Image (cartoon, rainbow, N blue to C red; front, side, top):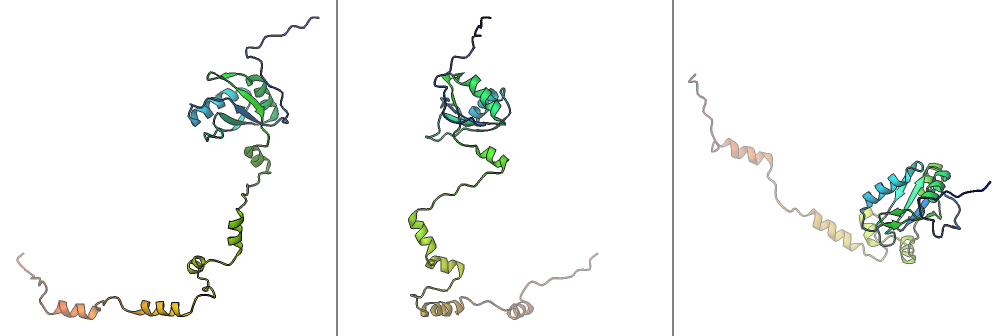
Length: 193
């Protein structure tokens, strides 16, 4: 029997050989820059959902990630099918370049229970100040005792200033005396009814 090759409607993929292991997440590049992020995500969802359930699409518009996206599928078979079918596909006039993502998606890690919150390393200067004694501002705000270098006379002077009266408030007795002398409004009762 002779084997005949059925022509594909998509052009052959350029550089389809990938050294990255198969993954549920696909890395797409060669996307149009001019599309809004929401429109791009919607179009990618419509395009990719024909090959299997899409869990997440990450398309950022930062300078570093412009024209790129990550599409996460439910399983590896769907991702492989989408990669074979869409690699080289003309998307808004530009050919798509699709590869497996280098690492597991955060969405998949959350579903697996293996997600770890990323920790960012602090600069060395920040570590030195955070490990030292609290600063004067921290002591003032959080009520810690003042540093050893501060004199005890300063707080005593501030207490004396705080005790001085700033104004005089009239007591209730004085208000009642003014009202009872009759100089205020008098009400007349009339029985004209």
